[in-house]
View: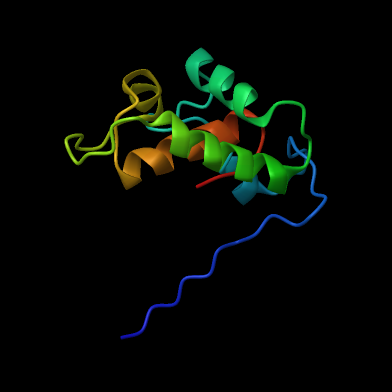
Length: 113
């Protein structure tokens, strides 16, 4: 079996927050028990990461870089933490990077799964 993974790239010049009506995209913007994008901690981190940019592709790159620097302890000691738990502890591996990144994107109006 061969598995090919291709990232979805935000179109250049795309703005955020998303204001469309696509139900799938809107679902990818809602907070949930692991991606608490409506929490103060996540919103504050997301705003800090993106600054004044309104370009979605640039904001995504900024969030990704921010999370890479923000998580200090890169170990396997955490089973599976929520975005808020990661924001507070600053500990995690690939799954914690993913939940924090996705929650921060959602917090500023960028759909993420």
